[in-house]
Length: 143
Image (cartoon, rainbow, N blue to C red; front, side, top):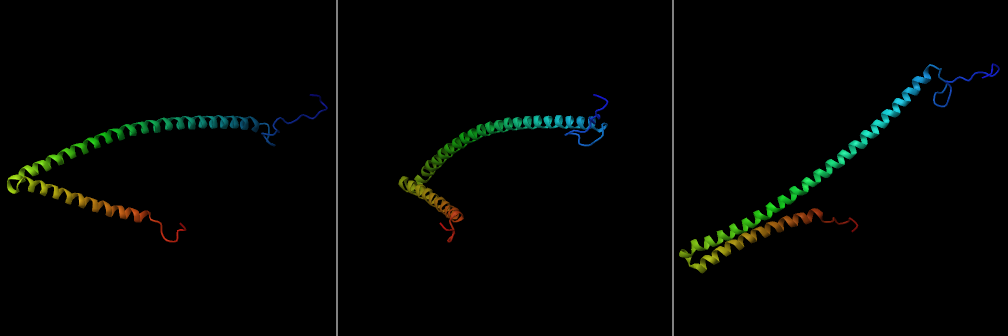
């Protein structure tokens, strides 16, 4: 620089404002540190999002396998229950046959089973009516 030209203050600029020369390095260091912290924060957020996605994928896989096993076990339980009910019916017919003849025993066992079926159907119908009432449109809904 020439002696005739006034020296420009190095601390005056767009990022430092009108601060003195002593504050400029501190502010620049603070901005650099802030940028670094933001970069670390973004990287941590990305890492967290990736870990969360992997966790949810693993959890969904485990839930799917567990649901599949549970469904298989439930089907097997229903098959065994069906076999047990058949055995109970046959056993009841055999036990009642000496008392009221074979045909009378068959009629009694089938009658009791049909009464049980009727009770279950009526109970299901009542629950179905309640469910229908819960989701029925109210008059004046516009539909």
